[in-house]
Length: 308
Image 1: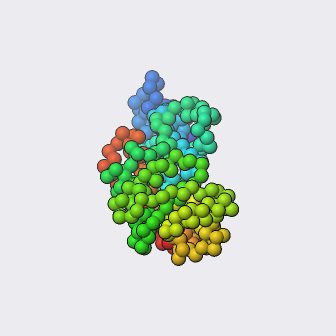
Image 2: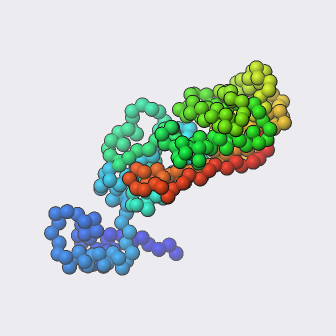
Image 3: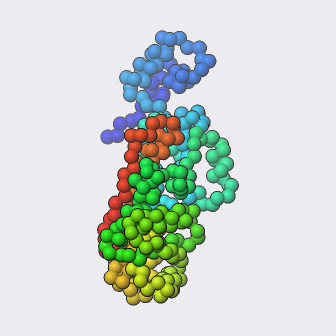
């Protein structure tokens, strides 16, 4: 049997006052003339019943003081974003704030922007711009931030003997593409690899195969691909199969962000798993103006499978 949530009406009935009066007391509404005895009776009833205010309703009443918006661009709905959102939501809820998540399908003004104006949130975080330089963690992002996570991906390939690595990017000029490529080249220099080349992989399977064939023909010593995300990694795997290449004997492929589909492919996709809950908690405390020192980003880890 599920316990019934205690409502404001229950508190009012227990205190012998109207629902409006109970609401005035529990919200500390200014300018309401109520006796101290009435206020005390309502507070005691709320405490005895275990009443918890409905934080969403409170947020809507208070406007910018209690709402944080996370806007996620279409195409960034992977494991990182899910775990980041979980940590962000949990930390905000611990301080009685409400998280509103919305998906952005374009950069132009529209109903989403009008919504932001209407609710006047305390802050809006945007994904993926939150991951761009200036938002990394600890040592410039190399300890648990985006830079360090890219380094984990490159080092895994280097540890398996790969000296020539390419960064596989999606078509459509993703906002983080140049950032990821820069971090990959910096990581390669730290590890001792040659500067990675970059390959933009089309979405259409036939085009991806043709692009991969041309790239390998121009760079015969290339043996591994570090993909922008799991989606791009799967495009490479499909193209390799169509070209008759053996994975990982001829080319190794490692994804990024550990989405659900990689384990279902043949060969199964080696990928980088990122637990971003700490990032979300860090972000929540930052926008609330709270101390962020206790929150350290969890380093990424590789999920080893068959492709690399």
